[in-house]
Structure formats: C-alpha cells, structure tokens
Length: 378
Image (cartoon, rainbow, N blue to C red; front, side, top):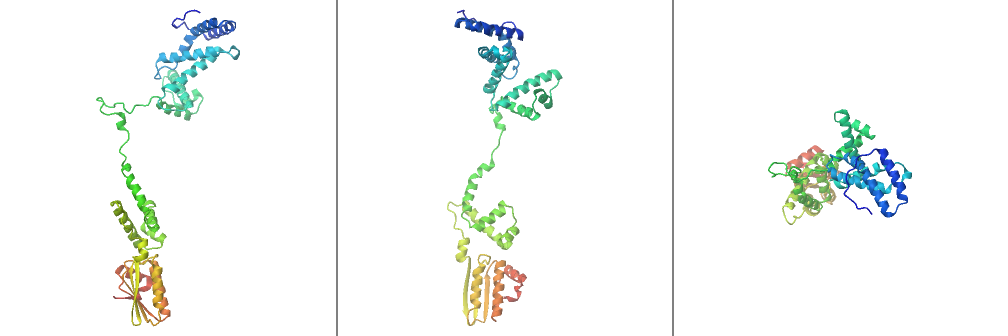
C-alpha cells in the first residue's frame, strides 16, 4: 500500500476532465483489491481538490476562514467520491450538490448565533452570494426586486432572509461601547420597570377587592376599569350620583386603610348596613306615631322603610304619622317612592302624614319629587 503524503493543491482541471477521471475511477475500482481501491480513490480526490477549493471560495467573506471552508469542501468531495454512481449521471453535477450542501450545513450548524429555520438560512446565503454577483454586474447595490428576480423567489422572502442575516453573528451584550470599556452594549438596552415595583401592591389590592360586597366591587370595576362616570354608574344601578360618590369614597377609604395595615379593618358595608346601616324606630304619643329613620335610604334599604311606614299608617287608632328624617344624609329614587306610597296610603285612610327634620340635601330631593307639601320643620 503506497505511503500517504500531505495533500498538495494540484492544477485545476475542466469539468469534462473531472467527469472523465470519475468514470475511469469507477471502472478501475470494480476489479481492484481493497488496497488498490484506496489508492485509486485517493488519486481521484487529489485530482478534484482544485474543484472543491473553487466551490469553497464562493463562500468566503462571510465570517469564516477560507482554510476552514476548504476543509469542509474537501469533506464534501470525499463524500461525493464515495457515493458516486456513474449510472446516475455526471460526477461534476453530483459533486457540486454534495459539496455545496456541506458548506451550507457548516454555516447553518456552526456559525449562526441565533436559531433560524434552515430554509431561511439557505436563502440568506444565496441572497448574499447573489448580492455580490449583481453588485459586480450593475456597479451598484441591487434592489430587493432584482435579488428576488435573480433567485426566483418573492420580495418578501428576500426581505425575510436579509433580516434573519442579523442572527448570524449577533452583537455581544458585553461588548464595550466606549473607549475606556466602562460601559457595555447591554447597559444601553432596557430600563427600570416601574410596574415591577407595583406587582405586590396589585396582588394585595386584588385580594382585598374580594372582601368587598358585590355592589362595591362592581362600582369600582365600572369606574376604574370601565372608565364610566358616576352619573353613568348611578343610572345603571338605579341610585343617585351622590350615593355612588359616597359608596366609592367609602370603598376607597377602606382599601387605603387595609393596604396600610397588617390586618384589614372590618368592612362596614352591606352586611353591617343590613344590621345598622339604616335603623327605623317607632314611638307613639297618643294618636300620633313618630317614625325615626337613621342612615341612608336607597334601593337596598327602602323596602324596610316602606314596610315600617305601612305598618305605622295601618296601626289602629293612629290619626297622624310623622317621619323624622333628621338622621338621613341621603335618599334616592327608591326612598322617595316608598314615601309617596306611604303618603297615598295615609290619604286613603284619612291619616295625616308629614316629614320632619329633613336635611337640606334630602329636603331638596323631596321637594323636586313633589313632596314639598309634607315637609315640616323639626
């Protein structure tokens, strides 16, 4: 078996010479011994080395050393020689495909800094090569349309390949951007996320909101997430705008206190309101009944007041009913309705009916609602 010497670069040959040499190699290999077949194979590889080097030089200037590309091309050449079947066509055509495939695979698997789909990687290499060829031919940088026409692809595909080329060798975040190296490229990217500091507060508020009654949660959602006005909320809930303002203020005050304390304070909301949010008491002085009301009279509490007034008006031996509203800071449409109903019931039974001690806001509401005649001074 002949000794192997370092491979030197033979003179270049034409494609016809390569096909003829490959054909002769295939014929001689069929009847040769293993040692002779190895020698014949090595001679063909040496003979084709200039061809492999010529293909490798097509890919130079892309960030890889030419020597490395030549080694990859020679590996592809060896594979082409070992797999060559003369019955399947020209050796040169097969070698071009095999060597080019090895070179593209090398760029795809070893040199890209960011994962990019194989299709886009291959097209990116072809766009780079076509750009150099067209620049030489046109004496200017080719347009996207010219590159697409040259490669037989769409302009969108060319743009995608050009954009993905930035992932071939991405800039290091640790690369210095100043002469003294005090600042790195990563220092210029990003900023302090102010929202990060609010994450804990947002989680706490979310948990506290679940402690509020359903109506207050709905009002807060409508006001601060739905950007609804107080008037719009009042219309949808069937209460006055003033009542909405009071409820929102109470809910926000409770949330603020709960955020600043380790143990959330007791919510004096709907449940407490059911117990003492509005209180109704009745006293009798002869044939006159005084119904004292304390707290807000709204849609949630109006029916309780209406039941009390109906009972008072229907009490036997009663000639007059006076509703003491000095302790009522707010009344809405539902509260006005029960007063009108009580007035009508009292008139039908010939029982006097009046409202005493109404605060200015409540008095104005009753006056514009047609109840000015029942208002009395405390």
